[in-house]
Amino acid sequence: MTQVPSPGDANNGSSDDSVGTAQDRQAKRRWLVVLGVVLVVAGVVFATFLIFRPDSPGTVDVTVASPTSTPTSESITPETEVSEPPTAKPQPDKPCRPKLGDSNAIVYASLDRPRNVTRFGSVSDTRAWSTSKVLVVLAYIKTVGEGDPKNLSSADQQLMRQALQSSDMNALLTLRGRIPGGSGGPMTDILRSIGDTSTQPWPDSREGSHSWSPREQVRFMAALANEKVVSPAASRFVRSQMKPIPEHRWGLGSVGSKTFKGGWLTADTDTRQMGLLRGYAVAIITDGDGPAVLQTDGDSAHVEQMDKLARILSRCLNGELAPVN
Image 1 (cartoon, rainbow, N blue to C red):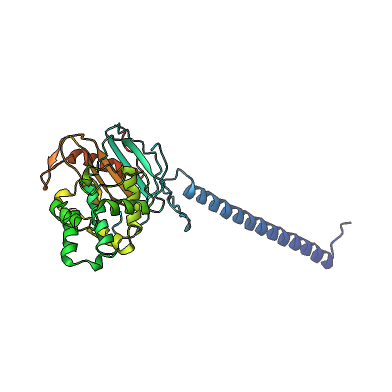
Image 2 (tube, rainbow, N blue to C red):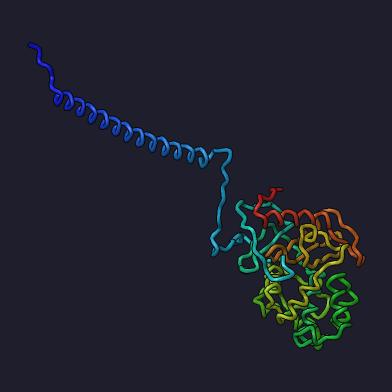
């Protein structure tokens, strides 16, 4: 006989089925949630990879320099511009190795590390010519002005300005003739006071024919920029007056230097400049290479070659690879 389930039995079976179905739905929801989370995380990882991978077209490489880091571009090899206080300098990241031979030279040193002098090339003729006018003016301030240009008359200051900016020989001779006991002693003392023991004692006349190496000129310009020559006031004054007239702004002036002094004489002698450029004390010199151009003082300078040396120097200071020529 067929047993007919009681109403209670039917209710019990329906309850068990309902419980099983609910559990299945909860399990499916949990798996869907887990799957969704996994997909989201995978998407984020993949997107991050696309954005920051090294060869991604949209990559931007930003390097933050340490606030305490200091550029160190100077180096000592076989053998800063500021008419104002020294400024920050770029750090050369490529070797500067110009081949200048034995008739041209570029020399430079950072204003904050003036003992580390870099030199390329060499010359046999290092006569100072009109670069010596800077020392004569300083000797005048040291002796007649007692170390301070404010103690000098406006007429004296005008003579110094003419000697430094126009390379006016008459103005220079007037100043030199007023230095008690002659100019040679004070000029020598000035160099000794900043550590130059290699330059021979200066004479009381014809100082332009006296030898003054580019290396020592670089150290001198660094001391001048750091206000260590004669006195801070004297250093500032002379530096402020080393602004050549437009006709003399070739060479260092062609690459942005505002503070420099040149020296020249004939087509057969050296042409040279010393000055400040982008946080460096610099000097360039050629021993008669290239054509000579008549200057306002009646003498001649090798302008084309000096422009070329200035460009090479500028590229070295910028950290570029200077041409080997």
